Length: 128
Image (tube, rainbow, N blue to C red; front, side, top):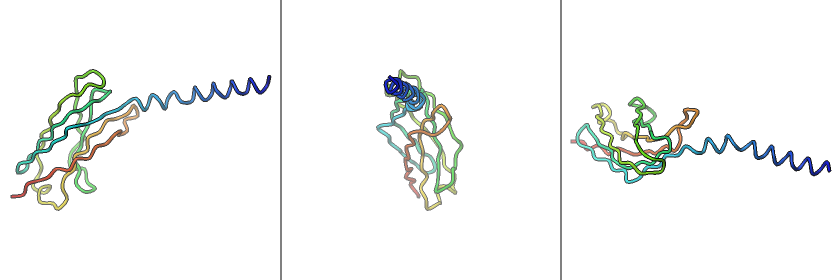
């Protein structure tokens, strides 16, 4: 009888312990059909996104330095539907003259405000 009760308690504890982990994994964001077009010091990034939270974020980095503030993009969608988006940005002369290409990082955030599913997209700058 003791072993039977011990087994039941172990199963109950195991089932209760995984609840928070499953909730944290429900936030997902997926990008597809990403395209970047640049002209002089401007570029346009287009694509499609499916996000369970209805928003995503991006920053622009160059090397180890973040060269833009975090920006939030809200999307109106039902969970799992693909939505088209477009991001237009201008780059400074210092960024253009650098040997390192700028990198756009698109990502989502979880309930703890941590980055999830980062996607890194290089921006090919046309130097004249």
